[in-house]
Amino acid sequence: MIQIRNLIKAFGSRVVLRGVDLTINEGDFVALMGANGAGKTTLLHIVATLSKPTGGSVAISGYNTADSATELRRFIGLVSHKTLLYDDLTADQNLHFYARLYDVPHSSARIELLLKQVGLWGRQNDPVRTYSRGMQQRLAIARAMLHNPPLLLLDEPDTGLDQHAADRLNELLTAVGADQRTILMTTHNLERGLSLGNRVVILAKGKIAYDVQRQEVGIAEVRERYFQFVTAN
Image (tube, rainbow, N blue to C red):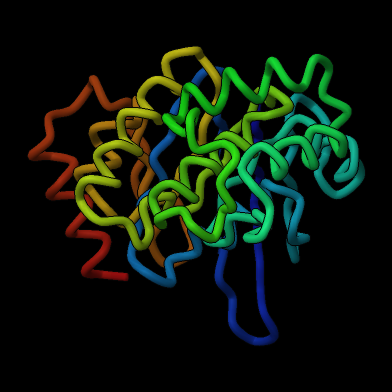
């Protein structure tokens, strides 16, 4: 699904990614963890075709992101720190706007299904500015899934959420991951990464420091490795 080869990203003299190699298979739910500044968001933005690498390559289903960015965006759903929602529009209006952009067939039925899935049906006619941060984040996930992309990219989706909202988000992401969609999620929350991902990848000092299938290791080992690399970052 995703092949990342010798990926390098520099901002001026500051090198953030230093030769990242990573293959993500179809249906993987990868929890990409690391300290603040490790390069997680930078890596995600390159995969999302929002940023170009300084060196190396990223291919999604065989298509190089540098050559096919516009075409690939239809295969990607992105949830970042910005919800990309319009505050003065309702949830229903926001999703219909994006449905037109992506030419989603039978959009009304699709929107109703997603709003029910994210627990916002019944509030679909309320302006987004009246939503809590957790509700806006769930609506952003519905927006990202609207065109039914095979690849979902989540950049620390729990940022700014209280415990109740974070728990509800976990339930939603567990359900989303169960349909074999490929998911790459950055997080600095070890427990959330372990509970959601079937694969754990730790990024440290701009490189992949640890990559393991979740079922192959115990929680204690992952925790030890995580703090080892985060402390050293």
